[in-house]
Length: 179
Image 1 (cartoon, rainbow, N blue to C red):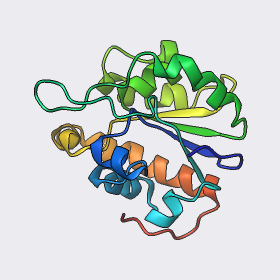
Image 2 (image 1 turned 90 degrees about the vertical axis):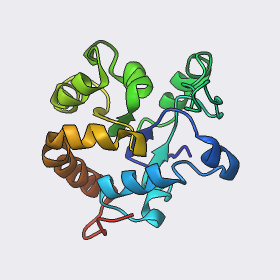
Image 3 (image 1 turned 180 degrees about the vertical axis):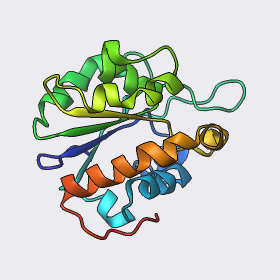
């Protein structure tokens, strides 16, 4: 879901099977959690005037031998990512969800692990470098529930900033805080 007006871009990984089947990004429990993190409802989330959604891969990459989603295919982003980014110069905030989006968008600011990258969120978010601010986030998948419990600073420190910035950029005031 690219946009000529959205000031917030959600840079995800690749669609899971359910999302691939419905054609609607984050149309699953991880989307519910992400909308809660953003403090917005479903209609606002899918409003292309407010949000652009551009994963690192547009196709479902399949499952590994353990039944987990494979990473985005390596050839996808180099083929079109720069053109996608160039088509949306109005974007002011990129939410880099997961390590693959963080690798592309953060470059040398990305740390060794996803946890370290998210812990150092201020490095990219408060940076004076040109271009949109970048806020690295863990993937909102149920698989990261344990990570969220082990890192309460994420909810205490990052989510209030995320909700405030999203509200400011999409012109919100008083959006619901649930999915």
